Amino acid sequence: QVQLVESGGGLVQAGGSLRLSCAASGSIFNINAMGWYRQAPGKQRELVASITSGGSTNYADSAKGRFTISRDNAKNTVYLQMTSLKPEDTAIYYCNGNLMVRAGSWGIYWGQGTQVTVSS
Image (cartoon, rainbow, N blue to C red; front, side, top):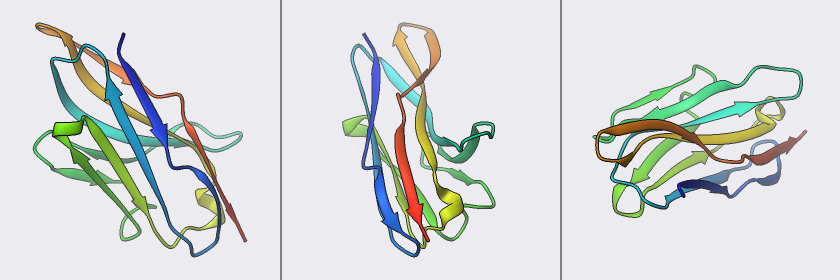
């Protein structure tokens, strides 16, 4: 069974930093793009950042200059380094990945989410 497991969330003061990790495990043939999304209470889930298998990145405007997405293909892991955190960054952060779980079969998989709370 394929799983994406996030870690690294927590409570931090405004201006602080956190590093989120998301490891994909199970029967995985290949991984294409991976990304981080977040959902704040009462709001829709939104893209924070994504990264292709080749390392090309894309960021939401709110994340540009403060967050950095990276991945370790050997470990099937994607990271999100978050700096200069603001209270409005408070949300549940989810990772996802476009995974090939059997030959020729791709699908989108999600982690269970990790809470990030930024206090003012």
